[in-house]
Length: 374
Image 1: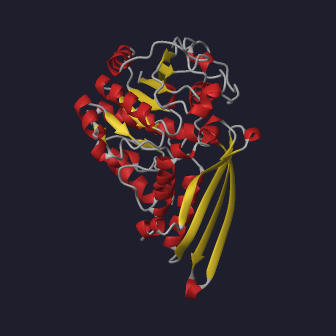
Image 2 (image 1 turned 90 degrees about the vertical axis):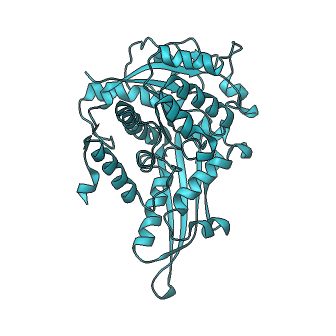
Image 3 (image 1 turned 30 degrees about the vertical axis):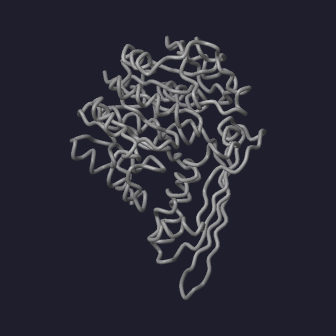
C-alpha cells in the first residue's frame, strides 16, 4: 500500500487542520473539497505522520495527536484521533519566536538541536516530506531546518514566505540537489484565499482587454499568525510574495510595484476573529474608451481550512518527484501552489498547464484534470 511519511516543522493551527483532515477523509470516504483526488498513486489517506518538531513547552514531549490542540492553537477538534505514536521533538528557536510572541509560543527551556542532530532525527524517522509551517518572519529558523532536511535527503514543502525555492542565489536549490530531494515553495496560496482570488480577478481584467491601474488587498485575522505579523519587520518577504503574485498577472508588474500601485499584505490583528481571515480587496480598472471600473470585494474564510488542501497536494507532489529521483527546486511543481515560486506564471491556468505537463512527462496521472472542465 502506498505511504508518504510526513514530518511537520511547527505544530500550529495549520498542522492541527492537516493532521485531522487525513483521518476525516479516511472516515467519510469521499474526496469532496480536495483540489485533486489523486496525484500519481497517492491519496490523502496515504499520509503517515512520523515526525514533528516545535519549541513550545505546551507541545514538546506530547504525542502529535494531543499537541495539535495545545495552547495557543485554536482549530477545534472535528474528528476523533487515536495516538499517532509521534512525540513532538524540541526544535531550534532562533528567530521563530518574535519578542512580542514569547507569552503565546512559550519556548521550552530544553537543549536545542544542531543541524546534524536534527538531520539524524529526520533520517531516523524515515521522513519522505517535511513541511515548514513556522511563523512568518522565521528567516534564520527556516534556513536552519531546510539545511537539516537537505542533509537528511527529505523533500521540503516551504509553506511560508521565506525565499528558499525561489532564491537561486541562496544555494538551497544546490543543497537539495546534493541531498537528492525536491524543494517546493515558496509561501502557499490558499485554496480560495485572498491572494488566489485577487490573482484571478487581476488575470480576468487582463484577459478582457482592460488595464489594472491600482489595487490593494488588506487582510485581518485573529490567530497567532496575525498577531505574530504585528511586528512590521517580519513582513518584508510576506508583502513581496503577496504583491508580486498579483502584479505578475499584468504586462507591467515591475512598474506597478515600483510606483506603489499594488499593495497586498496582512494589515491587522483582531483577537475575536480567531482562525477567521477577512480580506478586503479594491481594484481600479481602465476599460473601454477610458471608462473606469471599480471593484470592491470582501472575502471571509477559515484561514487554516484554506491552507490544508494545498498542503495535501504539494506533499503528494513532492513524494512523486522524490520517487522519480528529481531533486532541487522544480519550477513546474511549485507554480500553481505558491505565491512566490521560482517562476511566477501570468495566470493560474498557465500554472496548471505547467503542472499537468510536468506530471505527464513523468508518466504520472492526476485526477481530476481541472483544465478539462473549461
